[in-house]
Image 1 (cartoon, helix red, strand yellow):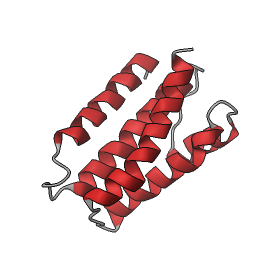
Image 2 (image 1 turned 180 degrees about the vertical axis):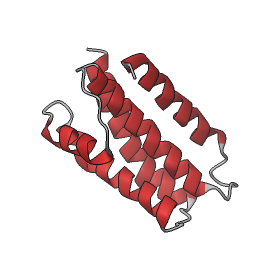
Image 3 (image 1 turned 180 degrees about the horizontal axis):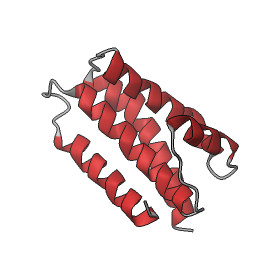
Image 4 (image 1 turned 60 degrees about the vertical axis):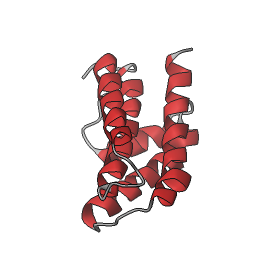
Length: 120
């Protein structure tokens, strides 16, 4: 997938999770999944610009950790991945406060870092 398609998919996932009313929905697990996959596609967009295309989450983790331009968001991305895992496999229902105060700031850090590189 090329960079533009990853950016479109990231935006699509972001539009999805923003379309749910965080204070009313019972689908907070889907909000968390949307947040994670939006971040994931922003990172894929960055790496596709380097002609690197990951075939697994573990490979992407390794690339992020070792890339000097984005290693600063490695922990944020890993935590987003853990939140997604909990939402998917542990059926965790996150509170609006958890999403707003713990999860979204990590997503915004990832997105901001990727856009700062892509726009430079």
